[in-house]
Image (cartoon, rainbow, N blue to C red; front, side, top):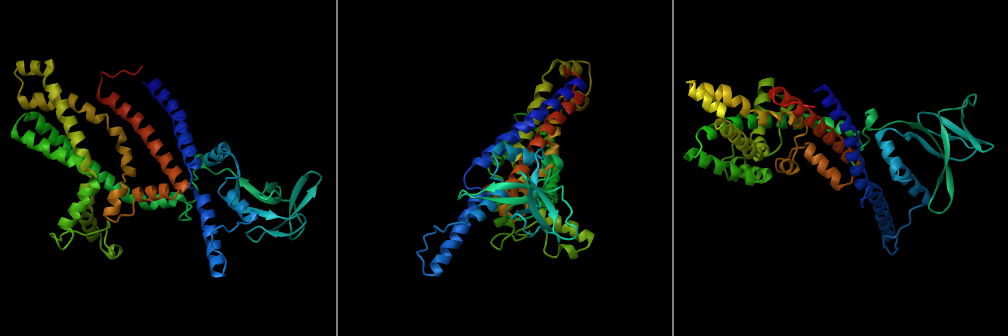
Amino acid sequence: MLQYFIRRILLAIPTFFGCTVIVFSIVQLAPGGPLEQQIQQLKAAGAMGEGGGGGNGTGDALIPPTAMAELERYYQFDKPLWQRYLIWLGLWERPMPSADVPVTLNTARKAGGGLEIIVAQTGSNYEVRNANGNHELLTDWKVESQDMKDGKSQLRAFKTEFAGILTGYFGMSNRYQEPVMDLVAARLPISMQFGLISLILTYVICVYLGIQKALRHGSKFDVVSSAAIFVAYSVPGWALGAVLLVLFATESGFNLLPLRGFQSLDYADLEMGSKIMDRAVHFILPTIAYTIGGFATLTMLMKNSLLDNLSQDYVRTAFAKGLKEKRVIWLHAMRNSIIPIASRFGYIISVFLAASYLIEIVFSIEGLGKLSFNAILQRDYPVVFSFTVINVAIILVGSILSDFILALVDPRIKFK
């Protein structure tokens, strides 16, 4: 078994990189990226300036080559796609945004942090010195020539660093101008709470309901409950949430529950007991919307698994030996019936990213779903890539963990 899981882990590595290569390439090559958006904003601003000054306002304002070069360098579009990917991984050096400035030979230039540098040419090489004091040589600075759109070039002095997902750096959001992991960390507790509550409710209700449906197969209870869960399955969670809001959170309905959000505005001023009650009241309707879609699958899986085991020879043999019905069902049949359910336990870690954009819109919740969906629409590359990495990692780890749990609960499984 150990060798099998070692192979699975080793196989997960190229799978992970393969998924990230595909997503990275598609997103980078898709039109309407952050560079194009920035260019359009500059052109629109130039057109407004022309219109205000009596110009034609056609929007064909020219962007200076130096400004275009700065934009391309900032968004790394001055580098080939493969190099951008390696930079994003953290396997290729990137210029540090805080230490990357255009320079002129033998002219002092402020470089941030109170540092002033001067670049001199020695033969075919360049050297960077501290413009203050004893003009010490700054060996951690590099100089390169940057080509611009008008055919000219300019010198840039910069320091480099290895900063990517493999080093724990997920970049800065283009929209929020904040570290991506700070944005995720601020919304992660919300998703975790909804995920854990939905998970517990789904398994408790569905496993019990599936058992009862199997024991009362063909009865009126079985038919009615099947119709109910399949109707619920066919209704999108966000649509059900909107109906529940009208029924229970507006004056046209019962007006018993909060209309939006996951906590009150004065939540920070409440005592601990009041905080728990406040969250519980706010979570009722969103939790129903989150969990309703998974009821049918898990319930029917539990029912069919138990029905299948009740028809096996070992169950009939147990009854023939005179064992009581409850003992046969709960001790013998249930042990094997729970195996398909246990094989899904590995994906429990996905509760950390439980998110639905539409449900969060309906209930005005600032969660991960809203963040990731808006990032896709606005081409916020660092956020999109970060969610890709996190989701791929969770799926791969969950798959391996599911196999491990399945091997523990089912002695018939032999990994070779």
